[in-house]
Length: 419
Length: 89
Image (cartoon, rainbow over all chains, first blue to last red; front, side, top):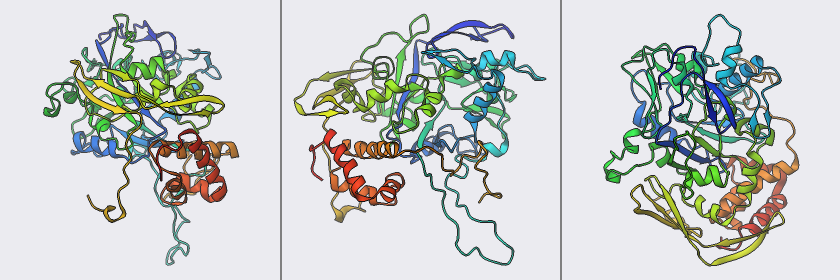
């Protein structure tokens, strides 16, 4: 993508269902890195976080970098308050008008809002630079014991306690969304950020970057991070060597990222969706990501109103306040929760594919199995079939086969601690 | 430890603060979700009840502490009615 400073293009963003302004001309990859997370199942174990950290950000100057993090909503955030601060900025820029009309976002995206924002320094993208204090560690106070202020020369009698979340909460796992219209790319004055044509992964060219931190300011998800020891910016690279099949385990075929593969809660499924020449997702009915996002519509983008067309999708947690969820995932929330709560035969089978293989599944196929039982879910008939679901890799080879009815093993007490 | 007391009126400090408007129906919905997700993973009724009674499972445990055995049993029964009888506990 190359763009002339100050020149806005009109691009179509399907997540807000309208054209919008973007500081570069429209170019699209052949395939797009995308993922679906089932937030109903995330237990906040941070295995994904550590898988990423131990692979990519363990060196000097990267201490505060968490390309993947899991935050507790509504309390937590990394950097602290990232979403609350941007929502506030947008509201100040376009007071009372950041609203959806049906499935069309009628407010201003971060690109559009930047034009109207008052301020000494014009921005291509509305954003802010988090403070060092906000970056200092993820989930600030999340598990920090609290208690009264101490007094010199005396102990606190009743000790300290961990904060208790007395209401709904959920864990939000986040990484770079490898956006279709990346704000980091749009903001870079050096054109040092690019989107790979083969898989849509967004990368920072380390030799071009001069560390101006415009991308850090612009990324609404705050996933571009400055490294003081090298004075350039780094971000999630989508584990691209694995996507390219460089890991010997998959013998040249695309493999899921470290954070996906490590997920013990089995909430993650990653894929490479086909992109048509107009930039829309090409119909690929039996690609599991395409099915979950475009057919079942059970997985939704994170803050679609920001306007970057993020490629991370979430099955929203069904117990959370709908207003909160709609602000976070857009107007598709009611449908998504209904679809998940009362899954049809195909959805139930596709949900079984999560974390059954480390390879990227390009196509699935369902073999009908026997009906196990019938019941009602919220007054609606529901039948469970023990179907078999098969997943195929890029070359059409079967890489996984699993059933809706999984075997269940209970470890005997005498082996509880044996590994 | 935070240096200052947190201000519940400060929207930027939503850390460990009780939000209003958690109705009984919402508590039930959340508890039902816990029960269903684990039931779908193959947990039986006894195992589920033990999960709610276990303080290490913070969310379910809070429900059990607030609402007690009878409420939790009825939630587990409802989850069982949906994903029932497929595996014994």
